[in-house]
Length: 238
Image 1 (cartoon, rainbow, N blue to C red):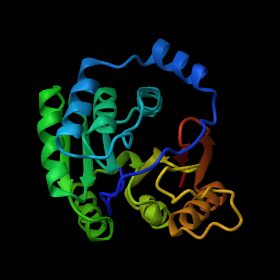
Image 2 (image 1 turned 120 degrees about the vertical axis):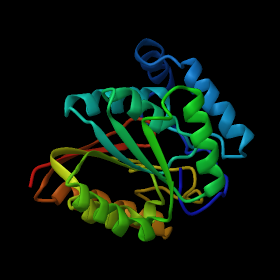
Image 3 (image 1 turned 135 degrees about the vertical axis):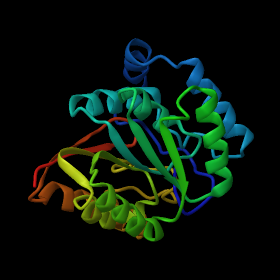
Image 4 (image 1 turned 90 degrees about the vertical axis):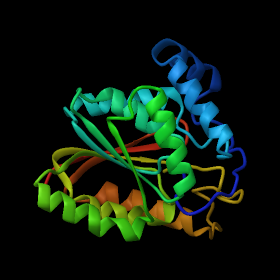
């Protein structure tokens, strides 16, 4: 769900967890629903890259984490067709809201229509904007409404992760949740790996910095869950 490119991706390589165990977890705890199938079909119709959406097992993880912190308002960077927005929305109470940021206006329109079709359109506010252009308006809105976010999910261009981490503390409530995808690997890194000493892809360098910053951040208790492409999870404690 990159926010700065429509380029297709290659396979991200072997799963950190054996595929048969991942399949077992997904089939047991998060079988694919009709809503997810409709969202995938919408992504295909809109020409979105296949495989960028979060998988159902990761979506279920997000539900568990959001409910564990009592989330009511979630901010997401990277909408695509709305798979992650659907998981987040269905974790919230009836009056909950997901604000989802997508740089591509066509993809945003497709996501709005698809999310309405699967019954969560009223809960998801899909907005169009590039990361650096939308941070200030989002922060002004938080200040004006005096409503901090309960959870933030990062799935935008990985080069912005360190910047988004530093910004998140300004709009995330105490005890709030920070989530980030692709903190261990990605099929879009031109065949390079996170731990490759010769890696020069700027996204890899940014992810390394993000992981270090989050691990050492004085106001986050955090870790990485090595599922799929790697999910960073942090709890904000100012």
